[in-house]
Amino acid sequence: MSESLQLSSYSGFEGPEKKLEIDFKQVNDDGSTTWAQYPAPPSDKSQGLRGISIEKWRKLCSLVNCMILSSTSNEHFDSYVLSESSLFVYPQKFVMKTCGTTTLLACLECILEYGEECGLEVECCFYSRQKFIFPEKQRAPHTSFGAEVAFLNTHFVDGQGYALGEQTGDHWFLYHVDHSLGKPTVLRQDRTIELMMEDLDADVMKLFHLASHGPAPAATVDTDPRIEVARTAIRSLLPFDELFPGLLVDDHVFEPCGYSVNGLHNGAYMTVHVTPELAHSFVSFETNCTNLDPLLLLEWVTKRLKPGRVSLSVFADTAVGEGADARRILPIKVPGYRRRGRTHLELFPPRGHEDHSPYDVLFTTLVRARSLDMPAPAH
Image 1 (cartoon, one colour):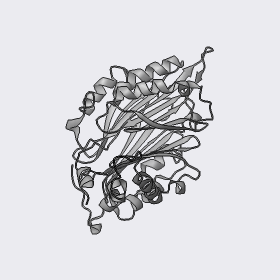
Image 2 (cartoon, one colour):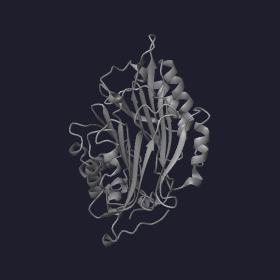
Image 3 (tube, helix red, strand yellow):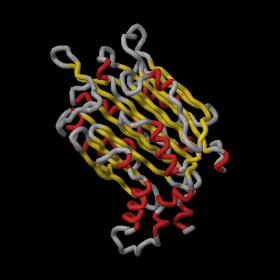
Image 4 (cartoon, rainbow, N blue to C red):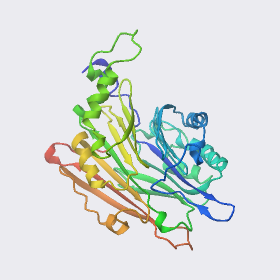
């Protein structure tokens, strides 16, 4: 193992991301409401939040302590690869996830102001994250989930916080605000699948270290040629077209290690982030593509990345896909893995307004079977 690979193995970078997602609605002059739609219809870049300038998105990112590395767009939404994860902007939806010690919630007031500038109001707000690996390194307001909830409650009077999973093991936090009273059921079609993986196969993770692709170039070289070698190897390992035919890809290979990719597939996004430190490896895979089978995705990812542990969250709107009852009893079986626990949560509307079905959330954790010599360590 090279010296640079050794150094990048134990720096203790926080892989698990924080995610802030806000759907906006527009109350029209005639009293009608234009709700956030999914699948997102085609739109031009001047519509809603897509009309916000790149300078303003850079300002928002500076509040979070990250920066925009690249951007890609299609006719539905805009995608930004960040120095710490991703940002997706639809006319009426904002999704931002950041890793490390970023201060994601510091941008909340800013994005609410951007929405107001576009004539938009909050329809729903969701904040979520997995447990931190290094919670002591986080900065306010991310020092604890209680602190995060307290901060969010300074902006919303009716939000609720939840913890799903094992208290002493893998668990996932969710904060939810619902201002979607009156939204037609037919428009409730959003679903997000998120995989959070730890203790990944060391040989696989070495592909994400530049030191594995040859010696470092001379200091006079502007661009490290190993970056393209690594990119080719990673895209061979993870052929996303198998899941999303025709996917528009924007990816970034980090120095000395790490990888981020955003994918645009019609109105759906896909994003993967790899923190390949050999002592604290973490990979996330997220998509809001509603016709992708969660079990197919689980099998596809575990076969290639070989995580020691993987947590799955499925956050779904009432009318999407298989439906809440089917998700409640979804048989989760992945070759070579066993389940450790499963939580199903229903999020009902504000009291006195239960005129539509709830959102529902599924969270489960799987570990490599002991027969594969991969025990489940506790962090």
